Image (tube, rainbow, N blue to C red):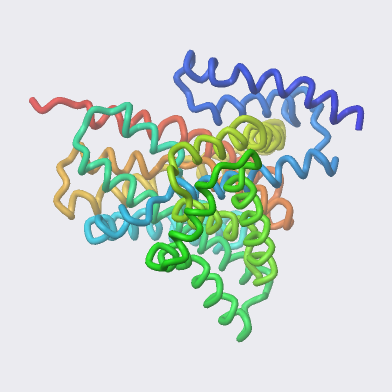
Length: 383
């Protein structure tokens, strides 16, 4: 307990200053937090007790809460309006890197499905701020956001299916589980069309000092995470669905979202990224030539399989060259899901420490270069 208190004593003040560092260095806050984790963790100071149950709880709940906020930010209405234009881009963003992962698994010790899912992810959290930062066509960024949202949703489902397959839980009963989990996923849409929505909103708008909507959000996170686990899927799928439901049933969603984000980004999520960053072991990566070679292949293959696939399909679909390159770059941006998937795979003993560290470095690299290149391509002036 003393070492946990000491770690929190060091980490919590650092969390206060990471947004300031982020603005100064022009890097996402999450990247700063992971770099801090690298310094405090296995690569350098090695002061984080990863085997401690309290540390593990903070990290695990941070991941669940991160996925909940991902669901909360997903706008199902905007998806339906731009689906026909976005769908080819989504398929390219998922399947080009997915098949690269399958191919790569022939040469590195990782399950093919797991490799495919890791490479197919994107990061909505990294792309959302760009809408305000970059002065470009609103219609274009709507397609970017919708396509990234869909890739995030597909990646979460692919991960849950892949883990069930790897754990050998695929059976006849799994079909019932899949139907039930898809039904939960459709619940937000059903709520919107039902009189239940007005009743829930009336309840939540009543003045109360007890933050009824916050209590409801946390109850849904726990309930749906447990249901998801018991159905043979990972708890992050249930947390994501909880976010979708809360986004639909809660009035004044912007104010409510700010409250929920303050819980996550003020405490749980920074701890998750710091503790996961601490598990990156740079010494293991450079200790063997094979590990270093795998790192280079994973980073460059992970970046270019996504970039080239999306850029090529975007150009075929009629986007101009700079928009196609920007779309490829934005979809190349990944972070949260790779970190989350790597954490799950490590706990299930599906990947080695060296591969885990390599995928985490891919996440950091793509989070830095993806948004930067996307903005760069959009800012190119026509001659």
